[in-house]
Image (cartoon, rainbow over all chains, first blue to last red; front, top):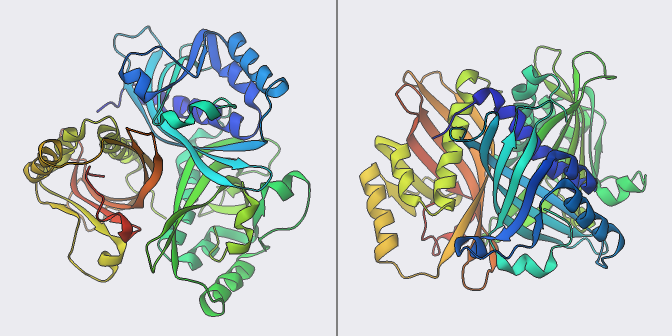
Length: 163
Length: 163
Length: 163
């Protein structure tokens, strides 16, 4: 059971919450600023991850790549207007040893409720685990790596907004 | 990213949790004691809030008004017996500057699972964001303002118990 | 409103999160190590608890009994492969007075999303309240008592994996 680096706990918990809130408040672009230069953001099904299959729904290798993806969502994609609501739970620092100085490994659970704007239909859209590497050594905390594992493969065709 | 007034974080988080637990444990009246004298409690759809429409499902301007509303629920309303279960997530202090001394602005997400007593039917009933002004300067922390924005308008006709 | 033993808050919150994560990561056996020798773990419907009915879905009086139950799940039971995802919310220390030294009473809410492995069907499976007695006086924190009250009786026939 990890209580490592307890002094940083609130900092990293807040970083995880900030990511979720930026998306929920339709300020999706702001998540790019939470990703370290050269940081990686991946969304993949648990099914593929367990089998070592590389296929991912999103796999951005830098803030710039993530920004492109979001721009595509804003400009090009055709989809029904919808909102996310994140529920994040169980943020834990699970390791610091063996990692570069100032880097912490995190786990947390998430679920996303999706509401369609037109008719207000509300649905439990996605759930899964976040596996993060967070850098707390710099001026501002940021994600070195953010890997989201989806519990269900059923969401795969429907993901428009990043999670 | 706000880490303002970190010393008060647990106090305000606990206040938010206390509100939810009072409702879930069917001690709904207890939320009135968490509202400051002259405090305001509003439940409104995101749809209306985004458009500046004033219509709200609940809009109490004092603990007394909120108490009346709850009394009506207990005595007058006819509704099928039901329980709420709150999931609250992502409590953040987002501002203190520009606010009166001892007042903090909060954000958090919530979802409510509703269970019908008769047949045990369980449903994701509501989700949304809490926008709070909390006073931590007095003897006990309390809400100056508690504004709940619902993601879906579909809940509007069904709200009996306060959220 | 309880802010008792605030110094232990993160310790007990992390203990609650650790239990959930062990189950979600399919390391269910690990929860036995979080239960004190002679500790009790009970899962019961709110309906039965409110009426003082003793019937429980799970009622283990020691880590060994819980281990047996999990072994049965792994070896004997026939059920469709499935995963849980816990959302835990609102952890509060509600009492320490009147309890043995080093023991704290906790409350928290939980919801569990269940995903079937075959077709990826995802469902809000269970929700309820955790009523815990936690021992923080020893070398490692552990549960003296862990009592889960389910909001719905509908889950009763379906519970295979401990919650």
